[in-house]
Image 1 (spheres, rainbow, N blue to C red):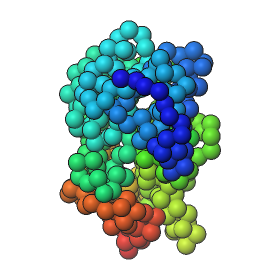
Image 2 (image 1 turned 135 degrees about the vertical axis):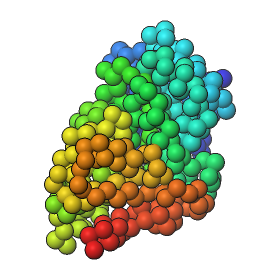
Image 3 (image 1 turned 45 degrees about the horizontal axis):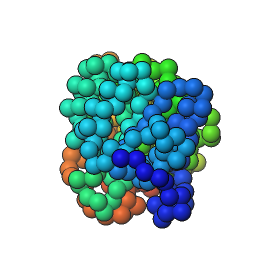
Length: 325
């Protein structure tokens, strides 16, 4: 189902102009191929939306356009992995996590095959496309599947670092990423270790634990709060499974409050994972889960949705101040 790539097309030019973060995925895969890794890639009719058109142009023999056939794509990726290939397959996070859950569980994870699943346009980033395209349950679903690593990079550089680190990771991985328009948090070449959180700062009043697209607004809120004299910490919990237990318990030991921030239902995702650790450890720190509060997300431009759900920097800052009284 592959065809020639029109680099003068509107779609190709829009990827370059409007979603620069997506170039990190394709470029990282291109680098891995050039380093000798048996990387192959595929998508379900979304090569322009996820930027894999760049990879297809460079290595057409390693790219498969599956069409609108997401479940078959995941099963085919499992088959490719069983032959020694290193497949990366991508589609909208809502389709990948929900529609393909059975194939991910049985064909990929149960079979212990090193497939890399890229769920892009996660959370509410698709805005006007509505509930069917919003992925606010995917973290909960994916982290409940045994032997599946779940990662939510904050930006393009961290995604590239995670993709390159995955070549030494035996388990299948679910990467949860945005739409390529996320502000940059890290420099190119940022160090990445699965299961090892990045601590931006410690605080005695409250520690923010964020993942994915919420790291940047959380960092903006963190800086404003610190400038206002609040003792606030910040952790980038890029690996939602396995969670960095030591980082969570250290934050709870030093802060009165722990606040999780996620572009996801507060049930079962990052907040749920942190709650499990704190409860099992008997931590006295109070946990506050901030995200979408067990409801179907509204339909609006992403910027409006982030403001409505208080998932922008101002909303996160206000949530912290409310917690601190």
